[in-house]
Image (cartoon, rainbow, N blue to C red):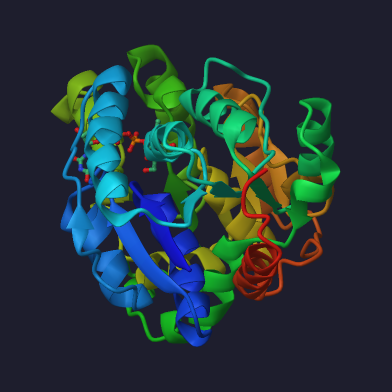
Length: 370
Ligand code: UD1
């Protein structure tokens, strides 16, 4: 069986890594990774391949940045050529980035079955580009692998037959557990001069939070207060970097003396900082899940989440983007009032193994297609 899997942006790499390893361990699968090049910097892409031991993709479509339409169109045109040449039996897509949706559409128009890993998540906010990507992908793919029970409910409401939905767990957490010990060797805490459970870790990159001056300043104002309680570490995503430079003057940035702004970090450094943070403030989807798996407090700076299980079972609290509320919730955690959580079912490091077994079984039965 020949399988092509697609990676495009940073959060895809941790999801493909355990699948690549699991496919390598079984006989009879030829696995080809296609990188669309949606993310291209060493710090946003290359370093993850090295650290997670993912074979360097022989095929890189090098689409780079652009508007949604342009980026999606470029991925589609270039991926079509690859599929026509390689004729895989199955395409695997993960998550909800533009590359996920683009490659699904191309494969389906060529009648190639598609499996979506992390299917069925819904924020019910169609202003989020990722929500559109999730809806389109889930509407036309053939096999749906889910991370949590509510995903199945969403998919069934949208007409997906339950026999094609497989609750397998969370591949991102496979990578987290596989690398947690190695991450201990990172010297990130020393480099940032912080002590365990004595700092706040921040990530921000959602367009709704960083693309306008008003929304970015609402969060930055909260950080200005929070830094007085505990030092803040803020690895800055390229999108956020551009906007911080655009919206804040040098003088304003000078007021963040206890915020350590850094370039995007590698996987091991970030994982180590995450597991020893007092609290993580984020608008990322994956980090809500990773903090839940680690049992670390997480405050999500968004109005909604497509990952409600991190709230109902995990350590996540949805705090929105109001400055005062962010400060209040962060202070609660800093003062020791933390929410206890547990790790959701099947977030156990074995999701990719379940996925590969299911694919093999469906292939044997001739049922890769819907
Ligand atoms: C993308 C995904 C988002 C995911 C995020 C993780 C979509 C719609 N968005 O958003 O779901 O959570 O990745 O990071 O697919 N840039 C660089 N170097 C890079 C990549 C980007 O400098 O390697 C800069 C470019 O100027 C670009 C900007 O960052 O314009 C934003 O990148 P883009 O890929 O458009 O979206 P993200 O915000 O990263």
